[in-house]
Image 1 (cartoon, helix red, strand yellow):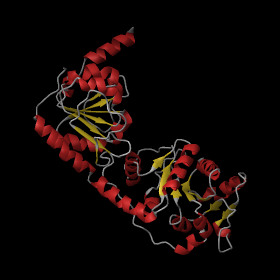
Image 2 (cartoon, helix red, strand yellow):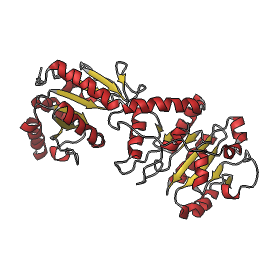
Image 3 (cartoon, helix red, strand yellow):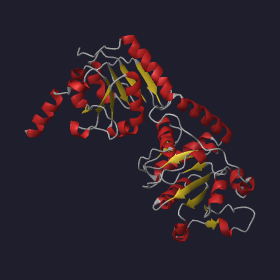
Length: 382
């Protein structure tokens, strides 16, 4: 009884300070990640209200550090609450299909950013912008991911080409070379599980480099238990890695730097199991390696590594798997596309340029939409 009454009161009431603004709709985690971009929007396009689509009470809606009105606007409440907010525009981030009936009732311009999934029926969009082409509606314009915005990449380091020569037989046979760099506790087992799944389809070798020197010896002893032929770089005495080897074990930073230049596919440490350390996606990308992340997130740091991973995952620059089997399927999919490092580097340069202009692109288009509809126009119920 009380919960139904509380829900009814929440649905019927909206704070006066939240009305007449552009309403930005999205899940709480998405809005939190977009905090600095939303602050920019508020400063350049006018006041905003955020509507959190995955909470039921206004008390759970505020985003730390984002000083704007915040309301609970899940699909069940949005149909009644959105018209009461009299929005000058509504901007939806991400999936929008569940919000269709609420959005269709508005006359305010509706903007869809990072558009993905099915378009809701009955909604006329003033603007549809996508972060990636393969997940977007056909009518979307792909501009990159404004949540992450511009990203920085490391310079291509100098590498010793002689190191990769030892894997000549793998290259000649077309067998993939995988790299799991800077792994932490629990991640080596994940990488081995990926390797086992890949080996069911093709021969392959995994270059493994734990991040913590204190773990080098115990991780090596654990690796032996998997019955995978393993060779340690610092004890390697021949010219070429024999085809029977399945793990190449790296225990120093200099060798790891050289290994990036050999890897066809990189499984970044920090993504395979829980870690507070942002993974390094930049180095494998600039080397032309395909990158496949695991399911683990890390704490949101306001740093370049976090911004790069966010942009790369949102736009599909890197793939992601929720378990070793799914990561292995992504590995095999990348192999089927072929290994062309130079083509990947060229695509990376174009991607970085698109990311650099993503926020400016949406700003220009938003100003055009809001200017065309009038600064003070509000939404009304049909």
